[in-house]
Image (cartoon, rainbow, N blue to C red; front, top):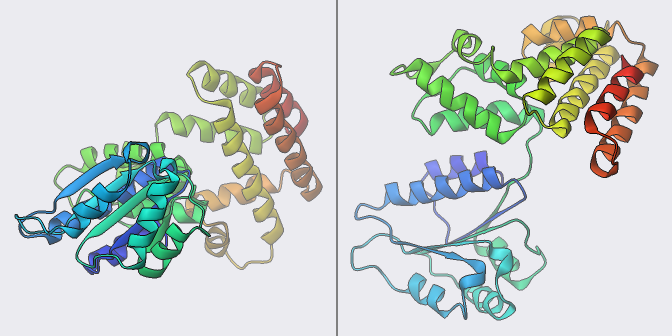
Amino acid sequence: MNVQELASELATKNFRPLYAIVGEESFMAERASALLLQALQANASDGTSTHRYNGNEIKTGDEVIDTLSTMSLLGGRPTVLIRVAEKLKKGVQERLAAYAEHPVQSATLILVATKLDGRSKLMTGFKKHGVMVECKPLYANQVPPWISLEVRRHEKRISQEAARYLADLVGVDMGQIADAVERLILYVGDRKLIELPDVEVAIAETAQRTIFEFTDAVGQRDRAKAIGILKNLLEHGEAPVGILAMLTRHMRLLLKAKEVDGRLPSESDIARYLSVHPFFAKNYLQQSRIFSEKELRQSFRSLSETDRELKSSRIPRHLLLENLLLKIV
């Protein structure tokens, strides 16, 4: 189950006794646990008693099970949230695994971890009587639904067109998505619906836009402009690996556009195939025609080599990126 599916299930007020929120995307894991706690709190007329622990703080596990097994005098659903659950001691894991075989249905145990062994007795119980929420980095086509979910947290809605356009602007970085949504919420004020013009005015001139100007310069094979924008990005603190990721995404979209050029009947069909806003589809199509298919495919070898060098080489990062541009532009 992903976070969007979790949100849909919580909307039905169908709560499970066990939740494991697992994955390396910490921002998403934080959102998932917040959604879960908010839903539990909203469903309890007298409030939900929530006890929070870090995995390495729990000595035996008995305190957790006692809390879950004891109905609060104030009513509500006893809830225990354990962060950094991968740090649970072996004995505690065994104790919680035994509980997970026969969990209290009127209580909720939530584990949040970067990684848990899905084959362990603990996770076997969670899968049988609860659910595992996976927190993995988003793919491009998953960003618009995530944006809609973020907007709903603020009790507002965003049109599909606006969500897709925003996704194309900010990419897959969770922090940048959250920042963009926050600025949109402030921009629209009391209005409940965020539409395309709102995104164009409030977001399109951000620093992330500059990254798109950089990738556009590469797509147009304007080497001098691309190098100039690259220097500006680095001077303003943009991470080299982030710049490389956005460039890789851009070249991948150019290759996909190249492959369907002339095979799909309209730019709208191409936009759907690329999972981008139609505004961008025409641009990708035009730029793909500047490169041969062989050049686009060869660019990924250079991109991959640069990725390895950024992570291991002592060569200054700006030189690695400039050398990459000399190869592919």
